[in-house]
Length: 108
Image 1 (cartoon, rainbow, N blue to C red):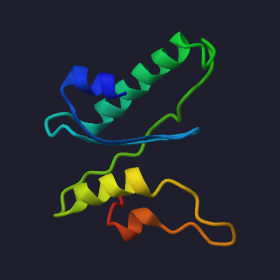
Image 2: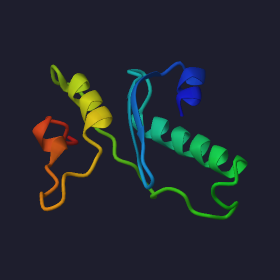
Image 3: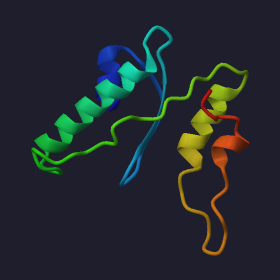
């Protein structure tokens, strides 16, 4: 994904690839986020298939992705912190905090 961002000249600020989802923060003010999501999914699928991680007919992604616009002061830094630091599960017996709400990253 970082290769695709570099190719498109998108400013990749944070990336967390998990076993069943991906979080990414990209600064590309002139590009619609939906286009970024579409292209990253296409690129990711192609790479997963090239490396035989998924089959040629296997469905890889959810039909749509979540896009959050970051307009408020500090929201970019909060999004980066969320992606880089808040991805691990809490200790057993503790509920998962709503990090997006805590850091003001709810979609609008």
